[in-house]
Length: 149
Image (cartoon, rainbow, N blue to C red; front, side, top):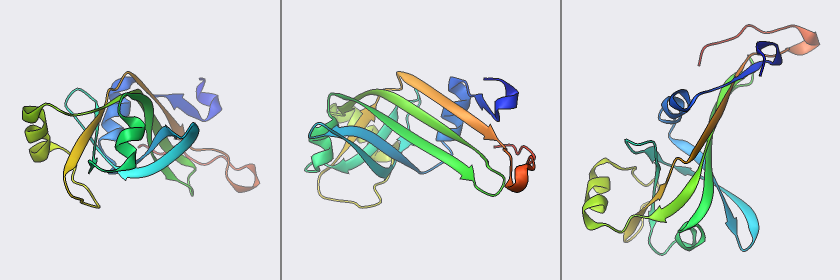
C-alpha cells in the first residue's frame, strides 16, 4: 500500500520481531463448524512457530490439533491512531516428541492458568502478514504524526 493510505505492509522479520514483544494474542480457529477466537498467552520458537501451552484435557487441543489456525496479536495506541497488527497462519499440532516437550518445558511459554498434565501446541508460521498503522486523521480531520512501533 502507499504511504498515503496511513499504513504499510510489514515483512516477515518485522512481523516476528513485533510478535515476540507481546505476551497475548488471539487464536482464531473453528469450533463445531463456527469461527472461534480465544485470547491466550504464547511465545515464539526459534523458527518463528507460535507455541501455546494448555491442559491436555482442554477442548482447545481437540479443536486445533491438525487444523489450520491463525494467531493475531497487535499493539494499538488509540490516541495517536498508530500501531501494528500481525497474523500468523499455519498448521497446529500437538508436540508429542518427549525431547521436544522437555525442551519446551524449559524454554516455552508459561501458562497463565496452569492445569494438570500440560501439553504444547505448535503453530507453523506458514503465512505471516502484518501492517503498521502510522497515524491517521484525528478529530476534525487533523493529521496526527506518525509514531515508531
